[in-house]
Image 1: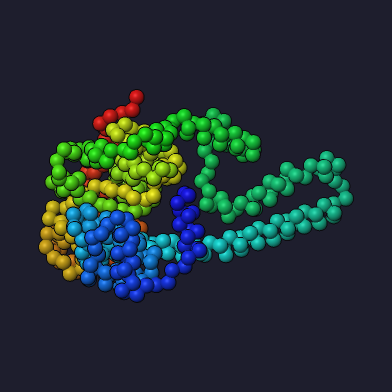
Image 2: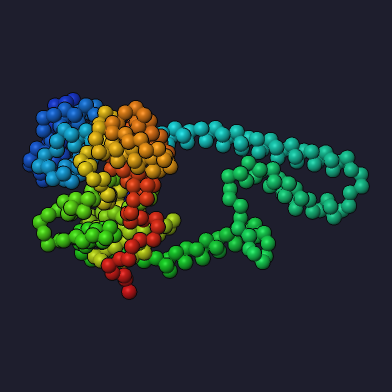
Length: 416
């Protein structure tokens, strides 16, 4: 949190103007030099593409370069290729579009909320005035009824004030033997909150158990990740984790996101945590609930609160996904062959389409089906079938895969 606030203060204090194409090259070289890297990892066409996609805006340059470097690492490239830059830019701008779309969707809520508030005030005023006039007209009213109007008026007002809200709120649970539950008082609510927090603390482990001591072993994190898929990770070989995954028809996916991203992908992942001293700690998240998550650190399982986990996690994660046979790159419009047939079959299976038609070309008909699927899953609806879209296809078509949300497979080691 402190680092994020610092970044915001720096951004607010120093507003950087867009760079020229030549300044972009110098800027990247400078950033790499500061990081202790003297090799020019971005060259020629890669820098031209960076300038084209970022339009010289330093913030976008940083984000695209970060994603491109992750991609180059996965592909074991010695320098970042133009294709990797294109892919990184597509991922970055796809995520930015989703954020902008969500912000636009929220804009209409503010005027609606204001109008609802005004309507509430007017309605309450009219009701109060109506009751006041009625009372003035009545000549025979008992003293007790005048002294205790609060119960009736409050009830009526509540019925009217919450008439619109009731549609949005779930109905309260009812006990089988006591009937409808009474509305809790403020004191009761606070007490129940304390009890809930105490229960959460009792049932969860402290994040300090993970962050204290030496940095966590990345090899053990990969070991748990592979085990979640029912596979073995060999830390004694020089073969990288992603190459080992490929031998099991699994792909590596490096992403930047948040807790909701983990739920959307619904796959175990290796997270990188950064403690207050700047040390990296690698943990494997194997299940997630509303408030807690099961994570493995050095082959020991911990049940930690999501709030605590999010404090030290800056969004970087690695997950494995099942690659269809023959998959080498994203399926794009105009492609043909076995991968297009696989795509057509998966969509037919998900949509309960019993026709035996075999589609081998990614034409407009199939593109429309893919875009509809991506839209329904909340993905970038661009018609490009890459790892994220395939993960969702695998999930909905019943492909066997470990899940974060459902109970995980038996783990290697359980804590105490």
